Length: 280
Image: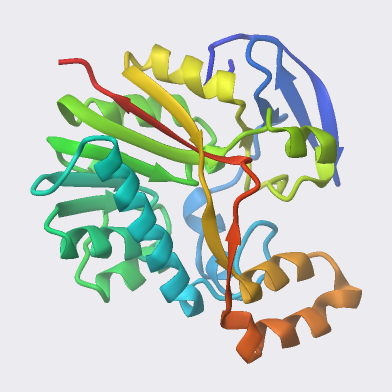
């Protein structure tokens, strides 16, 4: 079943290596078929965040802390623009190293979150942020539920989001950042779109699919807008190096150079932010 619109049928979309994506006949969202039989706690461990050996992973997530914090500040700005301001409680699903929650805490929010990665939870603990190992371990009530570039990695995102939405106070904000397969660039590039990174990326949602999913979750005031973000030259070089043995060494040199720390604004429009509210 499509986690976005609930349709039960899909057609072949494209192949990426040994992996097959299918497109939902209802909303067009893509998904891996079969769903990868991986243990998220093992897959999203140290090798995902450091070393660049896993498709869709990072050469060194922590070295780009300043870039992650810059994105966190922009995300907090979007929360304010959507009508939610501190004081209040933010819950984040997929908190990584805790940079977003740390920035939120500095602005006056109380915070909690979760991440399946023990490695990430350890790094967040260095900031004084105690993360649960899954969303079910987080306590509400919350004024804001946040999930940034995480729902596409979940093998079954709908029940996770449904449980998390139940932690939000009536009238509270839900903000989800993910990628839009219906964007012209994603359609044109097909299996070569940068977001196609199996088995890490399980779902390739469309804007229609995200809207349908918000409706199935009972949310109101749904808006989806293109979202720019910042990435470092080193992060881009690291992702390009994955699976490209001939380019790996020169790209790694770029990533470890002074140029590697330079931020680049990514704003092609295929990254989107959904905001919505729980009725009440």
